[in-house]
Image (cartoon, rainbow, N blue to C red; front, side, top):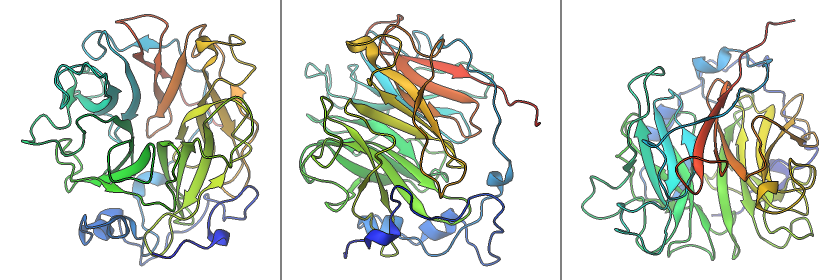
Length: 365
């Protein structure tokens, strides 16, 4: 497939239409209709856009918001003595995907500590989370997770049909790569099909991790933010910087562009974007956090912009109570922007544990 022209992708200062106040075209189709004709034969079939699609759920204005609450550990039912991290929350808020190296998945007792994707359910927003189940628990052979290779850091398209994730499994472009899987029914957390590599225009010979999918509500432009160790990033002691790639009309992601205003000489390892595209959370061990150095220097930061045509502001540390003297990272934002899941080493069941913090919508001024 031909590469996406550079002028189509989002660059620093690139001009895109504002996502607010735009009327949706009368001939818009839903994302579900668009995907019903797509077979998992290749990434282009999965991702090719046709026209701007409408989604009535997007009409609600987001924010402003109040402060974040004291984080709450999700407890020993969800967390384990192993590393439980890099969450993703479904649009309806009833499925919580986690990345964990606990035993019991496709890697058995998992002496190699390979990461796999698991899912926890709850009956309603007021009910407790249930014990996580491996995404391949009902498959005779592994489909989503991989024996002997890390799989994790999931992220969903807004309609819930697509899941993007990172894996170092064979069939990629070198190092960890970005992959995508599709499911037919959005409430079937065990119906994910064979993953497809996003190909070597967006992936590289280096590590690509932590995909974050964004559909601009006003323009229909689809972009994928991710982190990468490729040498085109910010020079410094860190390895991971933040990049963005736009989905082209041929159904493939184009060449990635460094998001310089979000990157630093340190490590940026995960992003979460509010669905209107005006607020971005990121994990970074850059200076200015709760502690000056060491593992506890990894904190969650936030950046904003006035419109989706603007560059991102300089990230600001969220401070306490979200961040702590310990390692905090991997933010995952709920659909309405009021709930954020993340991992922390501040205590709990052992290793990295999952926490949740909330904020209320403020009165409109």
